[in-house]
Amino acid sequence: MATEVMQSAEPRTNYLNAGHTVKSWLLTLDHKRIGLLYLFSISAFFFIGGIYATLIRLELVTPQGDLMTAETYNKVFTMHGVIMIFFFLIPSIPAVLGNFLLPLMLGAKDVAFPRLNLLSWYVFIVGGGMFMLTMINGGIDTGWTFYPPYSSIYSNTQVTLAGVSIFITGFSSILTGLNFMVTIHTMRAPGMTWFRLPLFVWAHYATSLIQILGTPVVAITVLALGFERTLQIGIFDPKLGGDPVLFQHMFWFYSHPAVYIMIIPSMGVVSELIANMTRKRVFGYHFVAFSSLAIAVFGFLVWGHHMFTSSQSMYAGLVFSLITYAVAIPSAIKTFNWTATIYKGSVSFDTPMIYALAFLGLFTIGGMTGLFLAAMGLDVHLHDTYFVVAHFHYVMVGGAIIGYLGGLHFWWPKITGKMYPEIWGRISAAIVFLGFNLTFFPQFVVGYLGMPRRYHSYVPEFQVLHILSSAGASILALGFLMPVFYFAWSIKYGKPAGANPWGAVGLEWQTPSPPPTENFTYQPVITTEAYEFEHVEEIKNAGKAEALQTA
Image (tube, rainbow, N blue to C red; front, side, top):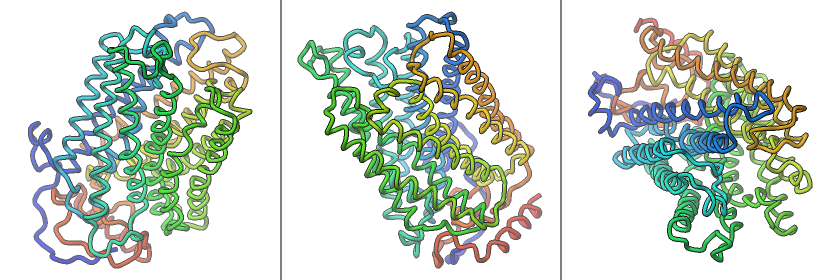
């Protein structure tokens, strides 16, 4: 709750109708519109990446490589991985929900650097456009990890162009992280102390640290790979005096923390969903807040667990193995504290809460199977098998994307001012959960049995498991497509949402839906702790009354 001061007249416009021209959107400095620009952009990349995923699953229905050649299959899984990781998963929650909500949650009128915010979107579009050129010119076949010496010597695909596109896109991530950190430090409303911040803000602060500190490393790495490929400078190529293991050290020093760029914001979303859908303050708020920072710090110390089979010494592997087990502790703190929050809470099983519960189950499986890969002896057997594919997707899809969908459903009424059909939201969430498990759980089994990943043909004994996986993928695709239709339907036909349809707490729910261009017509002053639900019934009833009055 907050005290309102400096009350002014009700705004005549909101951010959606403040200007309808294309120019007004492309030159906007409004963080909310920039968040929507990112939403449309990454949704397009998600659709393209999904097409490549469909081709992969169609190829693997039969043991023979009969749909595409091995070379084409290499390109398909590479393009799927690069698009989904660099152009969807990394920017999804920070760029969309973070951009839209962070100033609202802080009681600010915008981010600290609005022009820099718009520039970050244009940089993202330039990098994404260059990667589209990579697709048009034949694609790449190195895998999303770009391992040399294959990527620097043998591949005759568009490795350099793809590397430049990722290098450029990295600046978008850096600018967003910098903007968020400065905004959180300098633009909090009066009374908004660090321990009154929503956990969504804590999660984005930790994510921003990784974006600023880690992204330059991968940018330098892919730039060095491009120089070696074009100028024959010996950096990673053994023939030129380079060391391919050096590339792995540099690549994974960023790319494992990048996993937390994808998952920590989703954890922040889940904290908001569970607190507001159970009408309880998050159990152990301080521990959950600091666990986000702990994950960010530990994330920079575990890159070597990707290299147990890459000439790394046994002693270095032992250290990385122990630290990898340790990084599970802050994640476990979050999971146990969320569970304790739900216990004896007034749980509302609306669509966002269903996604939050799905996140808890799927992320727990993803995290627990990560411990198998952290054990050196087991990793020797499981390395580069479908077990790794399943583990990665349980964390990234079952964690990051499920959290993203939960957040979209929770804040959609605030973004658009309209309610989506709740029954369709619940059906879609159930379909996503069932389809996901049917897609990826069989891959744990086929991986444990020894099937390597990135193979387009396999022994016939694995066919049943692959058929199950491909059937699950079709169900999962249906679950992903359904929100596109009912979200679009809700914009025109949905019921007016009112300022606070969920009876939630937080400054973003004290503005009209959709929010005015300037966010607040008054200066919020924070007087209570985060997730104060003493007056939740009054808040919820007021939201319902406003929705009825608007209708």
